[in-house]
Image (cartoon, rainbow, N blue to C red; front, side, top):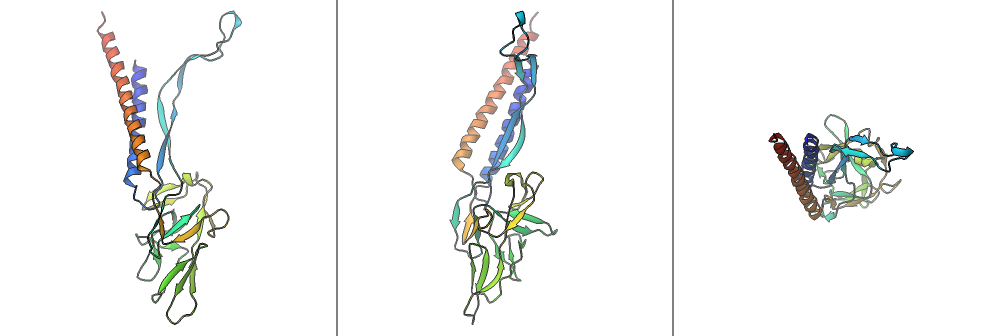
Length: 261
C-alpha cells in the first residue's frame, strides 16, 4: 500500500504542475506574441516481479510479465510555436511576423534577446525600441521630421520627409530563426534567449530562407485558446481528485490492516 501512496502522490504533483502551466497560459491570453506552454510527462521506473519473456515451466516463455509502475514525473514544458491571430492596430510601428522568425532585441547588458512581440515605439532619439526601451537590432532611427513610416514585407524601413519627393530608407528589419524554437528559454518581458536545445540564432532577410515576412500595422496575439485551456484544466482537476481518492483508498486499507489482530 505504501507503493500506491507514493505513486498517487506523483500523479498529484504532475497535475499540480499542469494546472500551473494552464494558469500561466490563461494569464497571458492578451499578451502580444505569447506562445502557450504544454507540460510533458513520462512514467517512472517499474518494479518487475516477472520479466516479459522469462522462462516458464516446460521450457516455455511467458507471453507477458508482472511489472508495476511507480508513477510519473514532469520532463518538460514546451512552447507551442503556432502563429497567433493577427490584429490590425493601424499603428505604423506595430509589426508582426507572418511565418517563421523572431525580432532581435538588444538588452541593457549588451546581450541579444528574441521576441515575437512587435509592439515597438520611438524614443526621444528616434530609435525604435520595445515598450521597456530596449532597442531593435539592427538599430533603426526615425528622423524627427518624418511624416510617415513604411515597412515593406522584406523589412525595408522608409520614411517620408518634408520637401522630399521620394521616401528615404532608414534601415532594415532583420529576423532570426532557430533549429528548435521550442528550446528557447523565456526570460520575461516577452523576451527569450537561446539555449543548447534551441541552437544558435540564424539571421536573415524577411521572406528569404524560410523566414516570414513583416506585416506593418498588425500585432500577433497570443496563441492561447481559452476553451481548450478550460477543458485541460477540468481534466487536470479531475485527475488530481482521482489520485487523491487512490491515497484515501490506500489509507483505508492500511487502517484495516493495522486493526487486524
